[in-house]
Image (cartoon, rainbow, N blue to C red):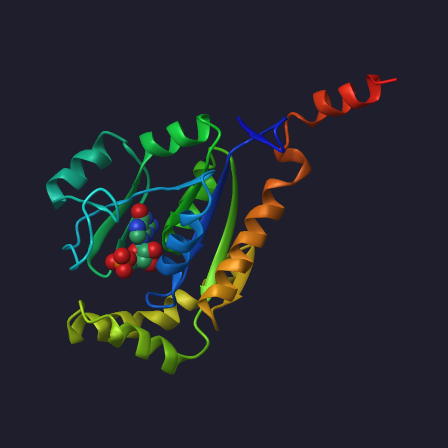
Length: 214
Ligand code: 5GP
């Protein structure tokens, strides 16, 4: 359980961020994590090749398909999905450890993962879907990601309408016109979600102490 306001115990929260590839979700996640010590990123495993600049164990755990199969068989993944011909999955252990240590956990996963997490629901889950301001802007952002070859960019663009169709399955929707503004919105969602009455499990004891004071 985490302490907030210095005294009230609260339950950890699972915050899911999803978007079509290139809408800015990974940048938003990084900025959110930078200045909030109470939330940590769930680092997924993936069978996709590492992009330049990515760090094994930080961006993903890069593993081969055999290893992925083993993790799946050993039931070490909370959820998994095939995205763009590669496998992705959320390792169970790290998430359970963070939540039991009272930390919130951020998931940068797709809609398939969000649906499975909702079912696995170790604790409460809040979900945010990020939309690009326009198709042109999405294409521009994907093309600017120099690390991806043109066929990968084209495949991601082709899949965008399908991914976007899942927006109604999310609690909050943000159109990413401006990255700083979008990060501020995600921070506001997180702040409000943390204040939900049912998550502040220490409130009864706290209010009891307040009322006992004369
Ligand atoms: P990328 O290859 O661009 O890093 O990620 C491709 C897509 O896979 C993104 O939409 C990302 O959110 C999603 N993804 C990354 N990790 C996971 C995971 O562990 N589970 C699921 N379901 N999706 C993931």
